[in-house]
Length: 436
Image 1 (cartoon, rainbow, N blue to C red):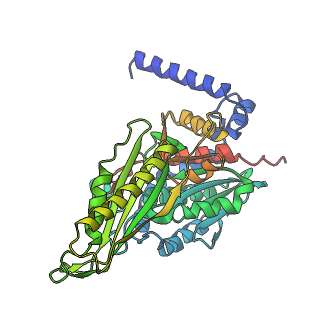
Image 2 (image 1 turned 60 degrees about the vertical axis):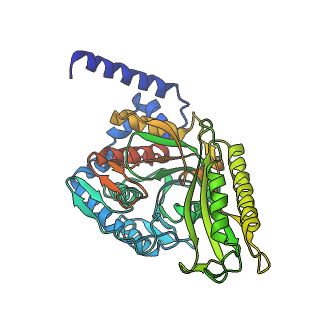
Image 3 (image 1 turned 90 degrees about the vertical axis):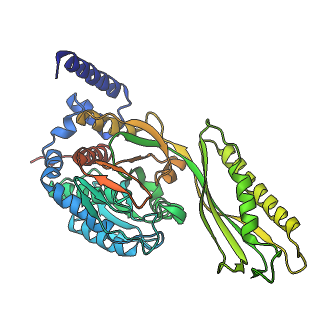
């Protein structure tokens, strides 16, 4: 490192300390700052040091658990088998573990203050349907498999952090819940996090979500989204003898072409995706039903409503056009509907949040820089209700999420584990040491 670089880093660190001292001293990490005069005091605690040092010699174990869990299929609404294995991992870390009625695995580390709870969570499910080959293959430093990064990384980190805290015999001030939740992906509609928040809402101090890889971002703004399904029904018939009868797939295609030509603004950023199309029984049959599933997202609630309205209008036009072009309307007509499969609410973490202060202090200790992001994660639910929540990566790097080519590289994952641990302890605080 040359002199100019060293001076630049020193200036940046001074600025970090100035920012941290300017923050309200409400967080546990801020209280450590007040007592010791340095945000690094948390990292100087002997038990915390022991927990931080646990990761390096156990990286092979952590990587192995990630691969093992990834190879246990967990399609939407079928997370049970993976939940059993995660429950065993959390129990082996000394936690009191239960599976709630929704399917969430909840491991408790009771704190001195049982009236306040801090949650560290990672979702169990993947986007991939039953039957997907989830065997992990290794190539150089990378692991390849559907779901290996999203969210094999988060689950492995959840187990590793619980084990590190157990091995270091850390006693928190606030009660910690280590949660592997269901229903984050696809049509799960965040049902696991919804149930968790409903159960503990009065006691929730903060929620930290581990989702995917990386240490370069923190999600503090919840991206609102809606998942919709279009269903068109008709009489059905034979491709030859009943040719000219109204065809649900034709109507769906007509409506879809109209919808994909809908203009969306670059700002506020707005997107739509036609994700699934189903219908028909054979190549030589006029189908009696066709279905389309659509995902719409926007930084603006009004744009979401506009897109949903546009979808309905386009499908109505598609059905009308198909009926008008059919040769034989006497043998039945088309009926259609648009149903809401799920809705993810928006929300935003306050800039002066104690949780964000704890994350920034952890970044400072580790000399890590991370940017604020907007995304759709389990954090949407607590954020929409005014509960402090963030979503962060668990270290390493990944790519190809939601594809069969998904990969994860554990190089550098130790920083992600330490960052999550320090943030968790920063907001949960350490129990006071007993005087002899």
